[in-house]
Amino acid sequence: MSLTRRQFVTGGIGATAASVLACRGGDASPIEGEYDLLVIGSSFAGLPIALRAAQRGLRTLVVEAGGFPGRWFAGEPAMLPFTSSGAVDYPANAARMIAVGGASNHWEGAVNRMRPSDFRLRSEFGLDVDWPLSYDELEPYYCRAERDLSVRGSAAVVDAEPARSCAYPRAPDAGYRPPNVEIDGRRLRYFPLARSVRGDGPVRLVDREVEAFASSSAGTLASGHQTTRLVTLDGRRIDHALVRSADGSERQVFAKRIVLAAGVLESARLLLLSRSRWFPNGLGNARDLVGRYFTVHPTLRWQFTPPSLGRLFDGAPQALSNRTYDYADEFRRRGLNAAHFQLRVFRDESIILKHQPEIEARGANRVTLSTAETDRFGDPVADLALGWSPRDLATKWAGEDVLAATVEALGGHPDTVDKSEKWRFHPSGTLRMGFDANTGVVDRNLKVFGVENLFVSGACVFPTAGTANPTETIVALAHRLADHLLRG
Ligand SMILES: Cc1cc2nc3c(=O)[nH]c(=O)nc-3n(C[C@H](O)[C@H](O)[C@H](O)COP(=O)(O)OP(=O)(O)OC[C@H]3O[C@@H](n4cnc5c(N)ncnc54)[C@H](O)[C@@H]3O)c2cc1C
Image (cartoon, rainbow, N blue to C red; front, side, top):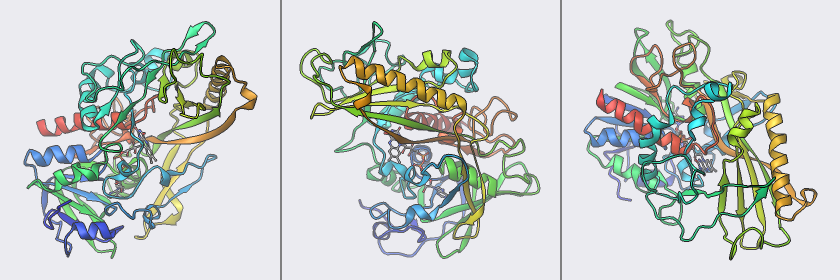
């Protein structure tokens, strides 16, 4: 990496040896000044927007709380601690990384799109809410996200995946054959799980995009700087952000427009912390919606070795992850949450089956400001209250039935299977997108209701979790927002 000092500012929060080296020698340059765009957070939700704005010549500042990755586990997750007050403890710090590039530094790269019905839960199934935008509106942006994420996939199994207007950017693995699983006389439609592939792993933003941003003449990245408040002077627009470095020194950053892309917990916390006489309960929180409708993907994982793989494949076994959505809408029609099911074959011929459901989007699952703990600057940390609803539990039991039927279809017995429950690190919700200010924190263009120049990017705007892993949708929404900002 050849980074110049001008474009990188380090402030010491989480500044690793790598970040100091990247800064080549030195002193933190001032980040005060007036920017066209301030982006808070340097991962999948923020960086695509910052990069496009800077390439367009807009003076763009990215403020990132973490340092450059390399030794990021040395205390950095503790930098943004949180408390947990619900019935279920979610390990939120395993799901994020306070570093330049955020969780892109350690994500696994499994990508897929939401399905059209994921956007229409209320109108199609009478569940939760609809999104204020449709799959068709997002579809071109999914193509763009797949290019960014360098996705290898195969649309080989007709109707198994949502309709698409572009080919996958990377050629599929040759000769894919879906596994042959029949339950109650119906053959499941599996498709190969698409993956982000660049070099020997998935796309990691620090490898390319961070440098592209910082080396553009209009882009500045301030790592090791935490945004602690968004300040309005008239109750209509954000005048400036307060940004702190590790020594506690505080700076004012002025920007015409601001994109908040700090992840699901921290984005909500920042709005709750940014109280003023116009917003006594937090910015954009006139209807007490900020922080609510947090969702995750709790996952069942069953591992076993079937007596023979002969009945699974026509020909040699393929060591691949396969996914099916065949039960997704069927579950919803039964008043349950949708799920996808996964079947992965390993070279030792063992099999892992997974059930990954969405959970019900409920206002009671929420982020608030902790009354028990403060961060290094004396601000309350995020508190997460999470619990399961009767629908969530019924969905889990229905998922176990499908897993048991799959084991039996492969010649195994459910009692002999190694069963565990895992988290997929896919938090979403807290600043949901809505049709109006009574139903959402942001509108369909991701602008905070009631604030002229504040936008939100990331899974925090998802009204419901859907069945897909979130990152492709996060990047697609980021590009849609970039189009909106660059038009305006
Ligand atoms: C182990 C693991 C595996 C995963 N695998 C997959 C997968 O296979 N497929 C998939 O789709 N998704 C996967 N994910 C999820 C994926 O990583 C996230 O969806 C994605 O990173 C979210 O991007 P983001 O920009 O919204 O948030 P983040 O990546 O969390 O980035 C937020 C950034 O904001 C910064 N920040 C926070 N607060 C502040 C502040 N106040 N001021 C300044 N900066 C701040 C943080 O330091 C961070 O860099 C995985 C996640 C993990 C942890």
